[in-house]
Length: 340
Image 1 (tube, rainbow, N blue to C red):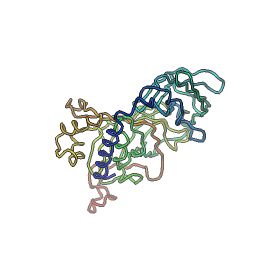
Image 2: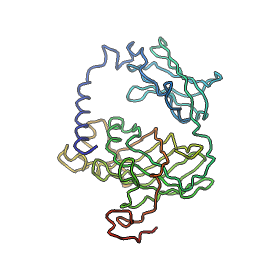
Image 3: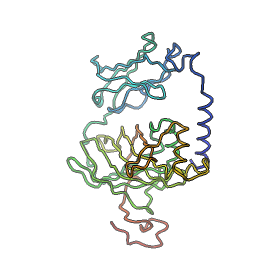
Image 4: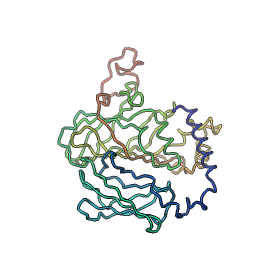
């Protein structure tokens, strides 16, 4: 998404937000009224891909319902402990007290409208969560940022994903009992190969508890609508599939700095002042807070989940120590002495 389209989407969000004011009440949409007695969707519909064993179980009602509650049981009818909670968008979730068991069938039941309605769905977890039985060394994985589910900031999550125009590539260099040595890079574009004109990312040793990996924190610069934006303190987690072909259940977190975002918003605000950018973001329900790096009040936390990182031929990562020095960089000017 280019800068102009992104700003248009921002304006569209304002219009939708204003149009929706005052709509709750008569139809019960905002107060848990009887119009909520209808199931719209669940995140584990029959025929969908198997669930990740660390996933929350989610249902969507046709209207908000404070009385809604979810229960979960395994194929033998044994209840699974957990808690029900409601997101800002009204979706209802169940968080198990402990991760579910991989390759196992479950039944989720939602009760709503003060017990006047009930619905159930069967689903299965995938085999992810089972320890890997292959060698991860030398494999590369592609985190497609544009396809991630950004849940924070809630008001702009969908837009954030759409303006991130590159993938994060992760290469496994060495595997230990409790750590992975990983090298990161940014792709040229979504789905593309490594950008050899920019330095690779030397992540600190990643915590590894087979099959779970936790990567970072590490500052990472990406292209957002043509503007270089740094995700400060980028951290990622996920679980490698038993055959090492991908990792699933991935999460991503970090901070965006309004000192970067101000450039993105300049056409809208008329200023590149980060304080003005933060004031503008407040109009979308997004509040700037202290930055972890220097305490300045210009940072916005981002959180994404439901990330699946595939391993393919174009996701391998080479160590690049400096800008424009790799032989595969079009701007290298014939320079070939580019070794880590």
